[in-house]
Every structure is written in structure tokens, then in C-alpha cells.
Image 1 (cartoon, rainbow, N blue to C red):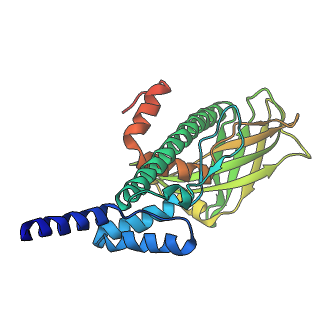
Image 2 (cartoon, rainbow, N blue to C red):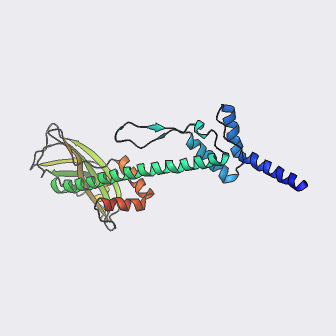
Image 3 (tube, rainbow, N blue to C red):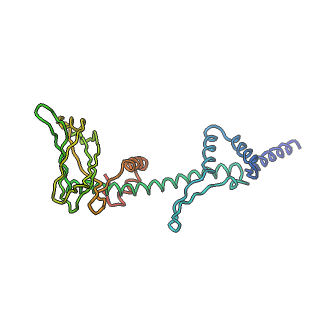
Length: 270
């Protein structure tokens, strides 16, 4: 009889434990259910559940539907946990975190693909600019004055008239090719556009660049980009700094996937 009593008590305790359900019928019961789950967890498991529960109840952005291109915001309401056992709630919020990570990964890889296309276009534009609109940079000064300015000459070998451009000037280490400095300057030629076949010449002062001319270990180079033509077109554009920073960050986060992107775009992978 005593053995039957012990079995009955054990079964009762087991059934009571299994019967704990998440109750979302009122705010107080939601709080009690949440705290009840926390009591079953310790250490890292407890911290993980707190984080995952917060993610579960926060709104998030769904992938864009091509048939409905508006941004779709979804939220797993607390009511969706009503009636689940404590263990089911723990599993549900963990699965949701994995789902959000998958959404973020897909979004990141789509962005990385678009940024890599932009990078390839930018690289092609720089090569075209260096070919059609070569830039010559020379030091200006005298025998006893040192370098007092930087002379710039741009040959317009293109078939369009230029009203504005951005000049990029970089200082690199000759032995390694490492870029030590890069700066930009905008030239407005709207009052005297640069016609095809002509040369634009100007000068500017910049102590760092001027000193680089005196160092045989350094090389000063330039190219132009973001050219505005006389008919209002913008050609030879390159990546903006913010895009390049995001591009570099995503490459670092997804190195193997980036190789796949390069292969998909027909680019040799080193």
C-alpha cells in the first residue's frame, strides 16, 4: 500500500509539472507564466531564454513580396504562446530566433551581391577614367622654396564635355602599394566646360601631398570620378564611403558565401 502511495504521489507531481501551461489571458497571468519559465532555468539557459523571448515579441521585417513590394512588418504576439507548455514556449522562441537569423543572413547576402556589383562597376569606371581622362599630378615650386603647390592636369580624351568632376588623390608606398592617404577635391567647370580634346589645368595647396613629392619612397597618383557632363548626365561614378564600409564588413562576415557570389558573377576567385 505504501508503494502504491509513493507511485501515486510521483505521478501526481509529474502530471502537475507537465501541466504547466503558458497563460496569456491577462497581463498578470502572462507575467506569472513568464516568471514560471524563468524558475525552471539557470545560468546561460535563463539568459538565452530572456533574449529569445524579447526577440519573439518584437516586430521584425519580413522579406519583400514581389507581388506586394511594400515593407511588411510582422510580430509574434504573446497570445500565440497561449496554451503551450513551458517546454514548448522555450522551443518556440528558440526556433523564432533561428528564423530571424536566416532572414538576416538572406538579406545580408542579397545586399553583399548588390554591393559587389557596384564595386565591380566602380572598378571598371576608375579604369575607364584613367584611360579616357588621365590625370597628371606634379609638384610646383622653386629651387629654394621647396614644393609650394600641387599642379593638376586632366586630359579630356572622352567624347563628352565636362562641367564638374571629383578628383581623388592618393599617396601610396612604392614598395608595397599600400595606400597611406586619400583625399578628394571637386572641380566646378560650369563657366568654362572642358571640351573633348582639351586639357584642364589647375593647382591647389596641400602640405601632406606636397611633402609626399619629396619622398622617393612614396607615389602620388590621381584619377577623377563622378563626372557631370554638359547634358546633365553623371558618368564614371564610384562607391560612396558608407557603401564601401558596409561592403567590407559583409565580406568579412560571410567569406565563403562571398566566394560563391564572385563565382556566380563570373569573377575569378583567388
